[in-house]
Length: 137
Image 1: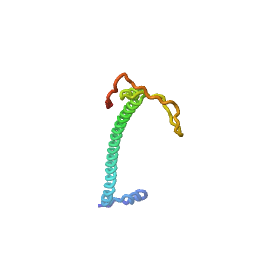
Image 2 (image 1 turned 180 degrees about the vertical axis):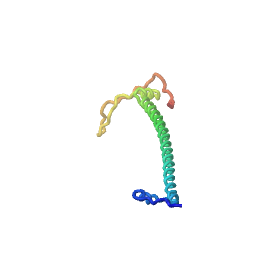
Image 3 (image 1 turned 180 degrees about the horizontal axis):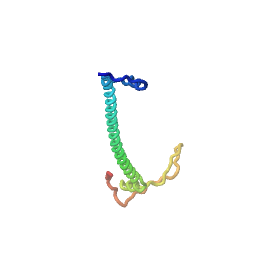
Image 4 (image 1 turned 45 degrees about the vertical axis):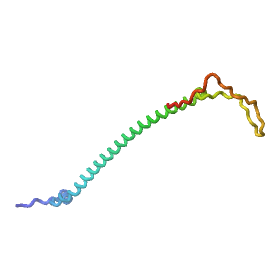
């Protein structure tokens, strides 16, 4: 049997770069395993990251919904406060408690003199005072 002819020129240089020894396949195996492991790890990392982002998105939606409901509740409570502190409501509640409008005020000076003419509040005689009733909104 005759041996294969020896390559010359450019073919010889390429043959030196890629030897045809059987040990060459064994040298590629760790590299291939490394590449497969890196790709698999990257894929698993992307899946974990995607899951975390999705969970954060759901949590954000829940918090936005809670914020909206709490804002609506705050606005309703503020409307109640405004209704109770309106002058007409205060006057009505004061009359329910039996209070009457005060007379002309008088002031004490720093030297003890009275400025103005004090007058008592006019007592209301139309109806007896209404008992105190607590209202819960």
